[in-house]
Length: 124
Image (tube, rainbow, N blue to C red; front, side, top):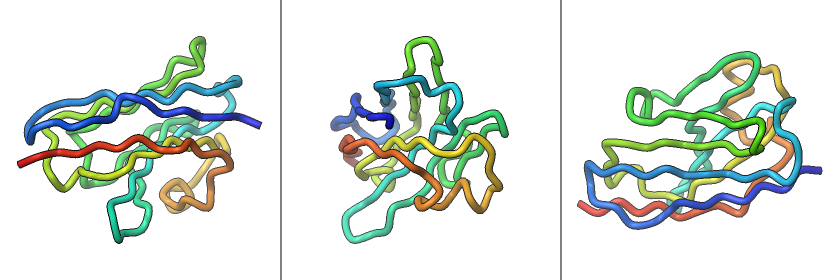
């Protein structure tokens, strides 16, 4: 069992940057670690994933967001830049199987553990 706690969310102006963190209670080196987001009234949406298989981003964030991990600190990060109001959502960290297809990586059902989420609001 792994517990995940996100932090770093907040209010930022369009064009700004934020870095989200996800601290895990156990070792994350054997897991794929991902970020999802969910805006009000919308389904949970894949953002990025990192594992031994590789790194993969949603087209909507490619070139603006960067996922990284520190396996010593058992922490995953999401550096977000050039933020737009469309990025406003609750951002969730998730841990899942270390190997995946792109279809699997983008599905919330692939992941075993979830954090409680952190709110990101981008003002225009």
